[in-house]
Length: 303
Image (cartoon, rainbow, N blue to C red; front, side, top):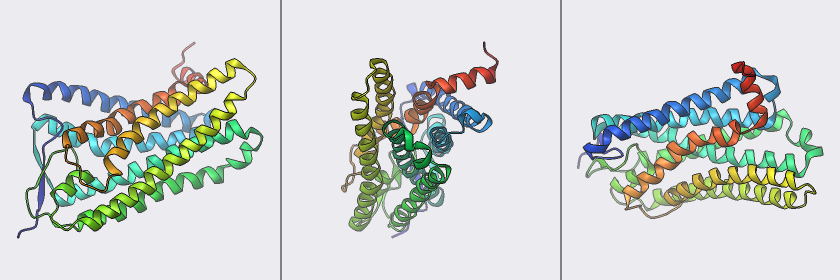
């Protein structure tokens, strides 16, 4: 029995008639995502008006999104350009490691951002104390270190499995589920570790985010001004849409102890949280914000 030395990624689509169209679409989305998030980072770092906890987290999120799409999108684009291609075992595990780091970090960052809004709306008088710079830095570092710890555990377990059979991954990057599908028995312990870590990182942060937004909703309902209620609900609804889409797709794939068989569905859902969410997050979280609009017009010298 020979250990697999490389994998073959089938890519997003094997249909020759649509691959060129998909390549143009996803290349555009990739460049647009990089541009949006680079702009956010520049605005947050270069303007003192945005040196606030909310924008500190948005800067972290934008940095994460740029790394996030740069881990998965190049392999997606290469697959659409050349068709199925070979990737070494080491390169595959490296991609998996960084992907898990970033997705775990994003979950915790989204929960931290929800907590920041909860404190700002429900405890405005205590906001400067509760969200002082040391607290914000601690939350950000916890997010990154938490993602790193989860990735070390999950990647080590997956890399230690035996891959003795077919080496074809029906995916556009090295993800957990397709790798588990190719591994030789027994994988029960690895699936259990994967399931528990997914429950902790996904469900734990999701519950935290939902608790914060629920408290915000209750506080907004007690606001005396109808205009203030509409504005707050509009903002929270936008945030909840992004959080809902991201967590729904991720939970479907990762919070299951059994192997996922319908890989075509898995690829479609992966596109949602690896391509669409990073592109939409800057628009929903930042570019719709009035303070960011003012700073952006000032930077571009618009009237």
